[in-house]
Image 1 (cartoon, rainbow, N blue to C red):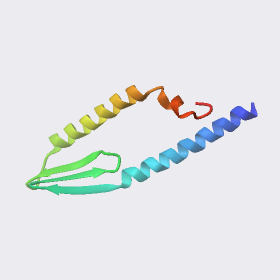
Image 2: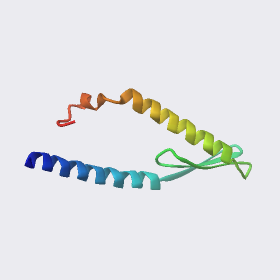
Image 3: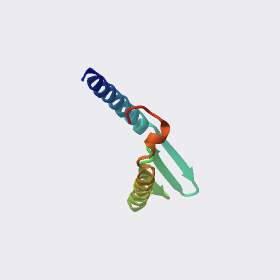
Length: 91
């Protein structure tokens, strides 16, 4: 019983650390200019804005974010169940 309680505590601590790392990654921001375009993106690959000749292109922001989300889902689905390949005990 104490072993399970210890594992639950460890998992809670791991989740807390993962959440803190996620916030840190989301706070990273890059801005790239190329020809007539400027794109601003967060560290988690979420596009915040796209400008073409100084004009906001919200349609492209939605398109890029949908493409990233869809690709992440596809990768997640393919990788599901493989965490055991890392040999981590208890997972």
